[in-house]
Amino acid sequence: MKRKIGIIGAGNIAYSIVKGLVDTFPEIHENIYISNRTFAKAETFKEAFNVQPQTSNIEVVKKCDIILLTVKPNAYKYVLEEIKEFIREDQIIVSIAAGISIKYIEGFYHQPIKIVRTMTNTSVLVGEGMTALAPNQQVTKEELDDVCEIFKSIGKIDVIEEEHLDVVASISASSPAYVYMFIEALADGGVLEGMSRKKAYQYAAQAVLGAAKMVLETQKHPGELKDMICSPAGITIEAVYALERNHFRASIIEAMEACTAKSKELIDK
Image 1 (spheres, helix red, strand yellow):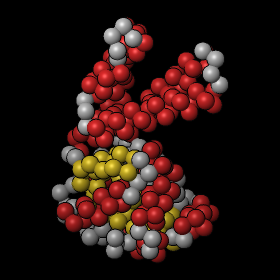
Image 2 (image 1 turned 120 degrees about the vertical axis):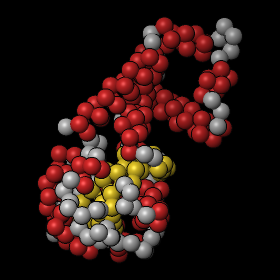
Image 3 (image 1 turned 180 degrees about the horizontal axis):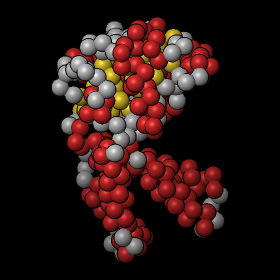
């Protein structure tokens, strides 16, 4: 990775990205520049990773080739207005926020600019994120490859059309919240039956982790893996029956529909 990487916003996602990059490319810390609304927060990244904190967003833009916007969606308008006069045609803006479209960002500029819109999830905090990337037409294959390398350092990646990012929001970006609810419910069931809370969370979380690895590594259909556990007249099929009676799958699909609709609504605004 030879390009200089600028990060505007020093929150959890920024921390995960910098950690992933430094772990993957040990010498890259010299080429990572970061700014934040409060300089003290940016300085903590120097202490942790020996990267280059900057006193302003404009300084980051002036020095870097790839600009990652890791601020909250409600701060995008302010940041884009602030940096628009300093963006060069050869720079790449990487958006990391729900509800911020490529068209919205392009609207701040009079000339064609390179934009990659991404959708990731909080699992990047442990290096197991899933990031979807959608470039606009100005981004070359080589440039996209460099942006992909950033996100490969914190998990898996997939390049898709922007129109599919709303679905990604519900199936990947927001879904860890549903999974946490499922783990919590499993643990509550264990506690109800007399297991300690600490052990219940450990058993539930490990079961979910193992099941996810089975899907990814065996490449078998989830239904087939489920059937492998369900013995005739056994305890697992009894549990599956109870879930089906209570519309388990339908509830998840409806939650995803609601999430996707909300994502589209934010774009429309």
